[in-house]
Length: 106
Image 1 (tube, rainbow, N blue to C red):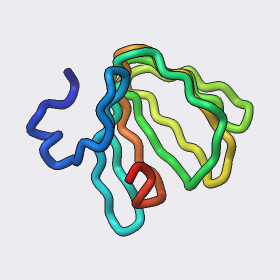
Image 2: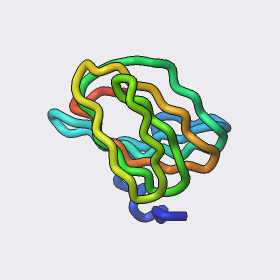
Image 3: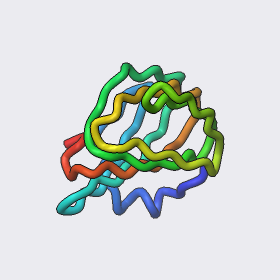
């Protein structure tokens, strides 16, 4: 696994299902997340604050304002504030994402 358990001790586990684990660290203005997708995950179109991310393991397809991006390990993406986007995330994908809002998943 890309990230060891020592790193995860700094994060708070906020969601644990058989399909997805989410770990977060919040600051005054942002939230940092590690997401482990154990099964294929299809996200519905939505919008919110700005979002930056990197694929740490696996693959995903993200559509940002009608433009499709195919991402693999090491690829970055950026979603501007209030831009509609959605993703199709493959089984066993791990992402690191920063949201411009401290309570995105809290």
